[in-house]
Amino acid sequence: MFLAGTAVVLSFSIASVLGIFAAWKRGSRYDAFVTPGTLIVQAIPQMVIAMLALFIFAIGLKWFPSGYAYTPGTVPDWTSWEFLKDVGYHAILPLFCATIVQIGGFLVNMRNNMINLLAEDYITMAKGKGLSENRVVFNYAARNALLPSVTALSMSLGMAIGGQLIIEMIFNYPGLGTVLLNAIHARDYQVLQGQLIIMTMFMLCFNLMADMLYMILDPRLRKGGK
Image 1 (cartoon, rainbow, N blue to C red):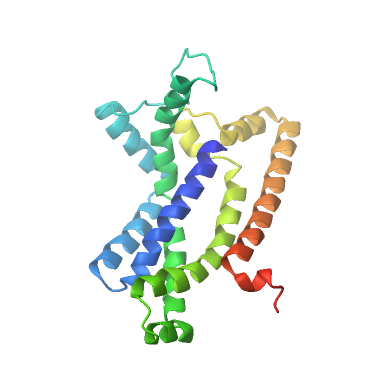
Image 2 (cartoon, one colour; image 1 turned 90 degrees about the vertical axis):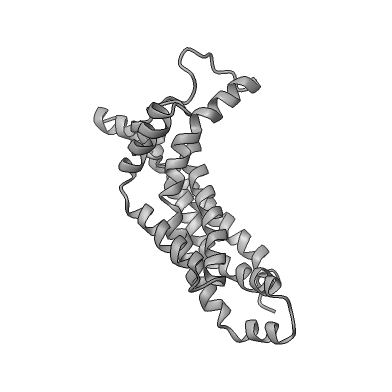
């Protein structure tokens, strides 16, 4: 849950920033490189990216551990700063692989939203009033472009509760995806039912949080349409 949820939030945050600049610099070299580049990475099977990262950064360069959530033999102590650093160190490579493959979809969504909004009349009026380009892009266009993306984020977070099975298996990283797979093999229907119920509850909670975030991003909703 930690791995999958954090990966979704990171990919959404990175993609939103990249998508805003891709729409702002539409047709530039930046847009021509970043947009197709992230889509190409997303098209690569997650297993291939994880295996390449494992062989290059863990086995070849030995920059990161090759697996597990923390050093084998370590007694888990969540109050210990050293243990938390060890957990974070082991999570870097799996988190990188889980994040990078999700950026493309969020980026294209944000870019398309921004392009549509930048063509709106109120954006033209804001430019005509002499407002700076930075203010027009970030205060007027980007804020409204986030609204449709928030729905995609809430749905992705809900689905992320199911875990990142491929990443978990390659890096031998504990997660809900592995728990779900083991329950299927063992025909443990109680665990399956419990995880599906948890996924449903989290989906509802994230949708509620998305509705609350709408009210922050769109002041009209706070006024009840008045």
